[in-house]
Length: 77
Image (cartoon, rainbow, N blue to C red; front, side):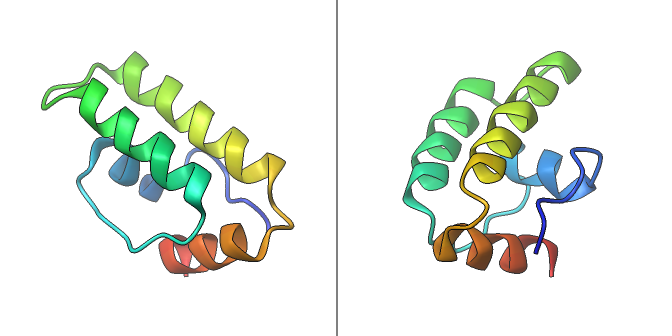
């Protein structure tokens, strides 16, 4: 599965913590933990966009990883 576009709603849901998934890709799990904590309960649109950019980049960079692929299937179906 290719990494979906940053415009997919699931990206915003996951970086803000609105939706939680059982992720397998360790780097993404660590990054998400920090993001959700730093964004807080009322993140700005710009902060969400930056978080999406970072998470999208890490999945794009590791697209061939089996654990990253598993996460993409979990999040985007």
